[in-house]
Every structure is written in structure tokens, then in C-alpha cells.
Image (tube, rainbow, N blue to C red; front, side, top):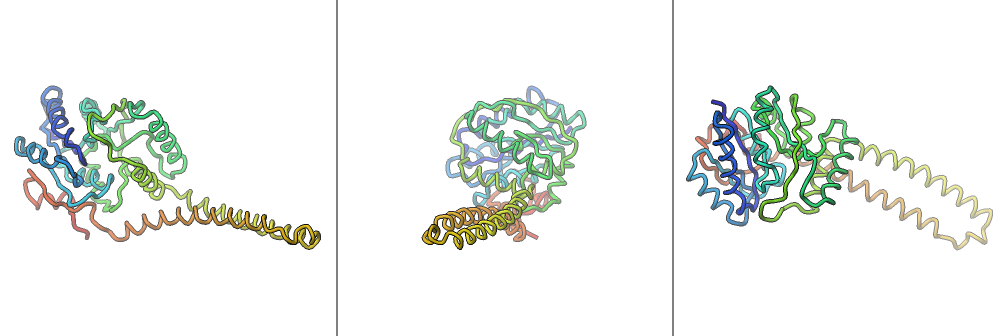
Length: 325
């Protein structure tokens, strides 16, 4: 009997983990009776009662497993690390807040049985903020145009991944993984299934401007060169224009000395414009440097504080160590 791993990253989801586990189990008992399952909750240092509820779930059902991170390792490392711990023939990554519909598990598995190694969900509509959905759509389109790798629009990571693809992830050894880009760049033949994203069932999202900006910068620095190329070209163009303006201004000042003797406005405007351009691109280059620095330090994806219902530490080492090489 094939085993399907359900990987659920969570942070402050005390109102959702119990209903979600019941909903997942119900799907297997009613629609997927011919499959075994495991549910892996990876908690990113929740500050509410999430861990207490997860301990209770693990005690009641040995097929529910839990990993408790020592601290919050971010919105990308924790889900990625959770996938590496999956023991099943395939793994389904989904959010704990019910915005990734449980009803999609069966279509994902059907697509997998058709021979696809990757089956992902693509949002065509969303019941979240219309403005946020529009802005996300613009972001996806922009990254798709700028990236050297074909990016997947309206894809959050929600999907099914075959064990062979999980093995590819284990070999990457990337300390700052961006799963959405990796699927597009290194993924096997995939099937895309459209769905409407519902609202959160309960609780408050941990996403804010900083987290969204971090996601955007990670995708830009990992899969685009356009920022650095634009900085170089615009810098060259600005330099040429500045030199021409300086020459023209010098000639006019020599010819019309009385008129331009006290005129410093063009110089100041030019300095402010060039300074703002320089600051913007220094910041952009800094993002690339930060990305390179994070990868060069080769720190672990996460550090575990505790894991529950996993058979042995030796088996855990085979699926991905928390120690850096």
C-alpha cells in the first residue's frame, strides 16, 4: 500500500491544527481508503497553544508526527525542511489555515497516479482581498518576464511532490531555498490543477509587508539578473547624460556669465537625481549580496528542538540533517 505524506507548516495555528487533521483523515477514510498516510506538522516556534494541541494529536494518532523548531526560521525554510522529512511515496505540502483546500488531495493523488511526478495547485480566484490578489498577480507576471527560468503564476507551493523529486531537493543543499522557483527550474513533468483559494478558517495571518518583501527579493535575487543589468546600464546612461549636461552648462555659463553666475539649481537637481539612483541600486545590489552571504555560510535550514512519532534519529538523518556539513 502506498503512503502519502501530508506536510503542514504552522505558526500560531491553535484554532486550525485539530480541525485540519480531522479533515485530512476524513479525506483518506472516505476517498483514499487504498492509501496509507502520515501527517507531518512542522511548527515554526508558535507562541500560542499550537504545540500543546500537536502533542495531543500525536498521542492520539501515531500517524500524526510533529517537528518543533528551536526558533522561527522563516516562511521558506520550515516548509522546505518539512518536505525533506516525508517518508511517503509522495508528499503534499499545504497550509494550516485551510486556504489550501483539503478537497484537493484526491485530485492531486489522481494526477500522481497518471504518472506526473509533480501536481500543483494554481489559484484562479481568491476570496482574500481583491487588491492583494491583484498585486500578487502583477508580481507573478513581473517575475515571469524578468526571470531566466519560466516561473509559475499564482503558485504558492501547494501541491504534490513525488519521492524522486524530494530526493532532488535533499541533494540541493540550499540554505535559502525558494520552492516555487525550484519546481519551475528543476521539476519533473508536472500537472497543474486550478482552484479557488478560500479565506482563512480562523486565526490571523503572519504575513506582513516585510515578509512579502522578503519573498519578492528572494525570488528576484535567486532567479533574475535584470536588477544588476539595469543598474549597470542605467548607471552608464546617467553618467553620459551627466557629463553632457555638465559640458553644456559649462559652455552656457562661460557665454552667459551674468545669467548663470549665481545659478546652482541645475547642479543640485542633478546631484539629487543621481544620488537617489545610486542609493536605489546600492540597496538592490545589497539584496544580491545578502543572498550570496546566506548561501556561503551554509547554515542549516532549521534546528529542531523536538520531534514526535518519528521512528529514530538515524532515519531522520537519512532524510536531511539539521547540521551543516
